[in-house]
Length: 111
Image 1 (spheres, one colour):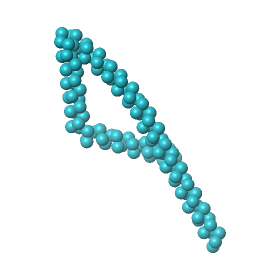
Image 2 (image 1 turned 180 degrees about the vertical axis):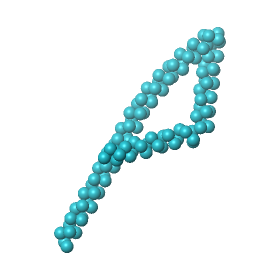
Image 3 (image 1 turned 120 degrees about the vertical axis):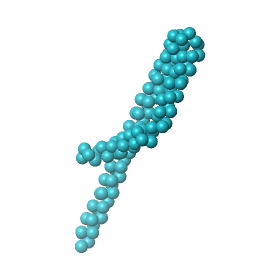
């Protein structure tokens, strides 16, 4: 009986250690994914900023008004922001939550 209790205790300890390792692996994977996503988004924002400035200058040159092109570009981004704000609950937030859940449970599907 004593040997059986010892084996059960070893089994429980092993399961706890395994659970901790799996949790650390998933946490590390999600953290690495977040860091790489932040880096990519940073460079995309920089590129987007320069493209927007260039577009503002281009439209200003086309319409012959030095501030009009930037106003048009700003208005376009305002409309996009408004559309995103109005549809965020239905489309954007659900997609983000589903993506995170898939990333966390991705390893379990492989195993």
